[in-house]
Image 1 (cartoon, rainbow, N blue to C red):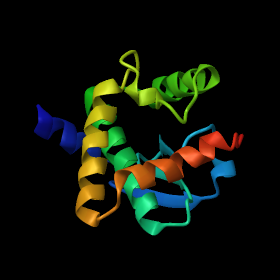
Image 2 (image 1 turned 120 degrees about the vertical axis):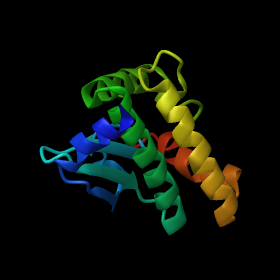
Image 3 (image 1 turned 135 degrees about the vertical axis):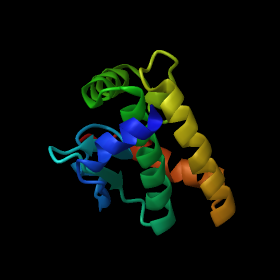
Length: 144
C-alpha cells in the first residue's frame, strides 16, 4: 500500500523547495508554511531569523510535516484553516498550532518536531536559543 502511494507521487513533480522570506511575507502568522502547488511540488516558506541553520531546521520540520500529512490524507486547506483560527485565539510564543491535540495534523507535527530537535542537536544548535529566535517573531507582534 505504501509503495502504491509513492507511485502516485512519481506522476507529479517530486520537488521540494524551501524559500527564505521576510517574516512579514508569510501568508499568516507562522515561521514556516507549506503549500502544494498544482504540479504537486512542495513549496515551503521560512521566516528569516538571519541564521541559515534556523531556516534549515524550520524547513526540514515543514518538509517532514507535509510529507506525512500527504501520506495520511490530511488536507492542506484543513491545516491552513486550523492554523489561522488557532493564531487568532492563542499566544504563538507559548504554543504552536500543531501542538494542539485537536489539530488534524497533531501526529505529523509531533514527528516533524522530533526530527527538527534531533537535527538541531547534531548540528550544535542550542534548542532554547533557536526557539527564542523563532518566538521573537510572535512576541514583537508582527502581522502578516
